[in-house]
Amino acid sequence: MEENNFLDLAKKAKAASKKIATISTEIKNKALLNIAESIKNNSNKIFEANKKDLDEAKILVEKKELSQSTYNRLKLDENKMRDMIQGIIDISNLEDPIGKVLLKRELDKDLVLSKVSCPIGVLGIIFEARPDVISQISALAIKSSNAVILKGGKESINTNKSIMEAIQEALAKTEGFPNDVLTQVFSRDDVKNMLSMDKYIDLIIPRGGNSLVKFIKENTKIPVLGHADGICHIFVDESADLEKAKRIIIDAKTQYPSACNSVETILIHKDFKYPSELLKALEDSDIELIATPESWHKEYSDKILAYKFVESLDEAIEHINEYSSGHTESIVTENKENAKIFMNSIDSAGVYHNVSTRFADGFRYGFGAEVGISTNKTHARGPVGLEGLTIYKYNLEGNGEIVKDYVEGKKSFCHKDLV
Image (cartoon, rainbow, N blue to C red; front, side, top):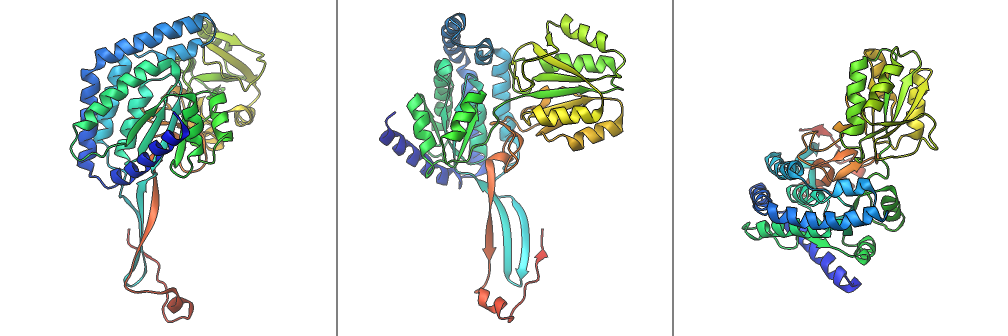
């Protein structure tokens, strides 16, 4: 899309963001239920489009122009379709995050300050491979009253178009829902144009590999919410239960190896009683174990797992804080005090005790869905659901008050919290 055309699109999205900010919860929920029904009714057409993408992607994998992990993320099966539809329905059932009073304070008699949640505005979403991202982000954007411009990867273009057609068909039937809230673009030039639209786009959310996120962060003035790597760790403590350790690690590595919350490194306490049994169980699950990786920063996105024996809990914590991408880490231990120390000391968005790292997901957290995982330390962190797509503003109501009266001592503040 040419820059002038993209500028027009961005202006329309900005105008739409003002309109959706004022519509009722009822209209938003009706739109979501219509979308869920439309995707279900068009599922065969969507599967056909996905098959076309898969056929084309398979050739690229054979030519080694596309990774196997990317191909795996591209596939849309019955389970993903079911979860996609249910995720939209779940979001419709969640509390509206907009207009919530987060603080109410009487500064003086008849002078009341309120902190109120509001939409961010226009979201620019750039993602690779996963076609179910469109429905997740569209649903979250609608419920949080944001407009969104979506740019998916070329490898999933047919699936993306088919899903968006079903969504737009549903929105057209929803009375009172504004136009131009959801927009889809396709070319590489559209990414460049999107990153330059800091006047109209308020937040960029990338969903993809390290190179994509790095490129976006280096080429835009717009705030970026996301994570570059998913280097997750599991520490098997001295007191760890063998069966728990096996179940947790095998799930975290094999349930969906290409996911960003898949474990990439395990650390094993030198005094853990069953190291050979644990490692054998992992190998029996078709996991390739690497004792001396080229780099502890490696994200394999495959059934490959680096491992290391450590002298102590402190060494495990130091290793994780040094090499983690700040995504999700877990400790397997029966020692509650060690678990507490680990959870308080690890500087990641998700820190777990005796559970798989694969739980780091907006759907599993009860957010309905997520726009992505954030390793940022500002605004939103971890799986970003509805609350992560809101910001707040301060409303002040008075009766002719002026600052001069307080500066000169004629009046004084009471600062009394009402909520």
